[in-house]
Length: 359
Ligand SMILES: Cc1cc2nc3c(=O)[nH]c(=O)nc-3n(C[C@H](O)[C@H](O)[C@H](O)COP(=O)(O)OP(=O)(O)OC[C@H]3O[C@@H](n4cnc5c(N)ncnc54)[C@H](O)[C@@H]3O)c2cc1C
Image 1: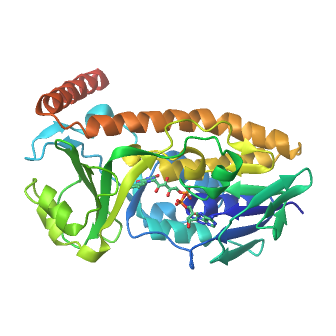
Image 2: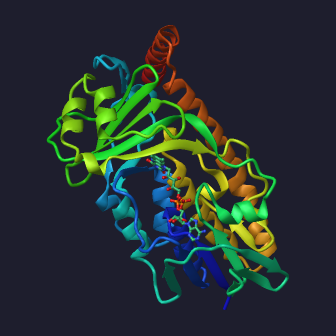
Image 3: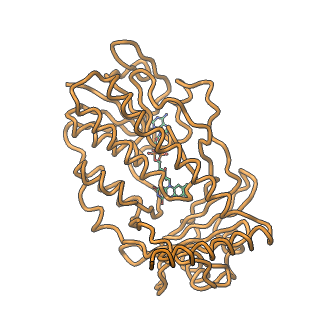
């Protein structure tokens, strides 16, 4: 039986493990954290990723999720700039990250062994296989160890690595009754978005331009957004301060080429970390796992399957990384004039799209 080691048990790693299990591989998942799990935040899951999870036999995503009402974009005073319905965009579902992670790991069968508290430090390979920490060997290693991937650093020492996008993000979950379809509000160098989870709680996120490493907490986000339109102040007041997450936003703007080195394949943020502006990073990791399963199902050599994976996933994710950066730059515009032009153009664009759709 073919064997694989998956490094990292984030959404990308656990989905890759399920995908390999489905292809009949014996899988070992190595995770350096002491326990499996995900952070306390929501996540948008796009239809393409839901379809991959169905293909892989991950059940219950639709039941645990809410179809986000694509409300659109407002100004901080609550006036609408554009309604998403004008663009006729497809709609992601919103789900709690921990629930999504549980649904995926719920599909782990006897073919998957998990070792938590295990940090990968070295990786070597030859024609016969790949070895981790001079201790564990397999036919294939799937590097799903995130944006600061040690596997990527070992195999691509010349690669530029993560870059700061210029803004930080806050996330939280509020237990407040809110009668509002959600959506995003764009200010000057600041954004706030929220959506309902299946249990009625509100998942929210916010961004702010600042130097990397400055930090921030519930107090800083409340100061920045406390006078924005309703129900934003109530959402912030209904969020436990200690549960606010803050992350400086980094991505991999220089495309990694290729996503495969010998018997090692990179998936998720390790290969193509993107800014969260499209809500597609984890979805792309899920789609990577689906593509890997599809290409490994054939009877050809491993190198052919991995090359086909690279040819499919690298162009698709390279586009998303670029687009996501651009949307972030637009959303984080700071100047009054630039912001007014942006809002005006979006408003006009929405009206034109709406007219075209009606025709
Ligand atoms: C604010 C914010 C909002 C977002 N919103 C969305 C959204 O709505 N929708 C969406 O699709 N995406 C979203 N994303 C992106 C998404 O979170 C990531 O793309 C996704 O979590 C990446 O998953 P991953 O498994 O590739 O990496 P990670 O989640 O980073 O997992 C990597 C795992 O590897 C482990 N690890 C690392 N190094 C080692 C080692 N040496 N040995 C063993 N284990 C190791 C880590 O402990 C971790 O568990 C958002 C991101 C941010 C920051």
